[in-house]
Length: 243
Image 1: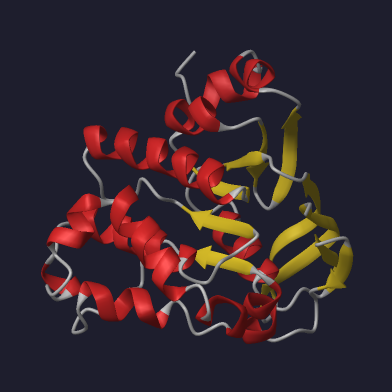
Image 2: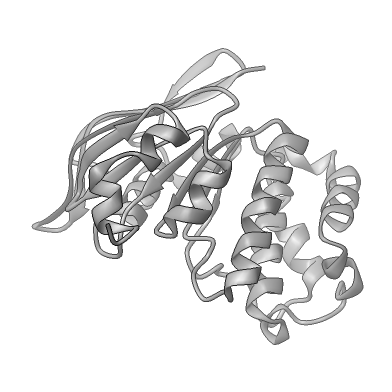
C-alpha cells in the first residue's frame, strides 16, 4: 500500500528562535527524496518536526499510510512511530551498553512489528552480515560505520512504511559513506519504503535520490524534480560543487 509525506507551510524552532520558515515539501509513495543543506540550515529541525520531537508553530505535516491520511502535528513521537514512520537520527543514538541484538530488538517495540521480529531480524542480518558477526558485541565498542549499519537496521525492525534518515554520512570515511548510501537504496527497495534523507554530501545523496530539495537558512531555496535537475542547478554548483 502507498505511503507518502507532505509538509505545508511549516514554521518551527526552539523558543523564540525560528529555524524553519514556510517550509513545504512532499515525498511521494516509493520515492527517495534528498533534503540537501549545509550545517545549521534546518535539516535536523525539519526531521524532528515530522517526528514530533519539535512541535511546529505553524503549518501542517501529514502522512498517508495504507490510504489513510494522518495529521502528525500534535501527535507524540511514540504515536508517529506507531503509524509506521521510523527515524535514524544524526549521530545514530544507539544504546552503547547494549549488544547489537538488544539494540535491534528495542527497535521492534511497535505493536505491528512484534509479530515480524524473526523475519525482520533475518533480513537485517542478511543485509548487514557484519551485524550478525557482532550480534553479541556492545554497540558502543563498534566502529562508526558499523554503528551506522546498526542504526539503520534498528529503524527497519519497526517495520516502517516511511523512513527518515538524518545525515547518514556524518563521521564516516568516504568509502563507508558510499557503502552506507548504497545500503539505504537496498533497504528502500527491499522494504518497499518511502524515504526522506537529509544529507550535506550532495554527490552521494543524488546517486540514489529520485529528486530533492535544497534548504538554506530554514527555507526551501530550490526543488529539483530529478537528480539531473539537482546536478544542473547553479545554487548547488556554488555551495556543493565549488563551481
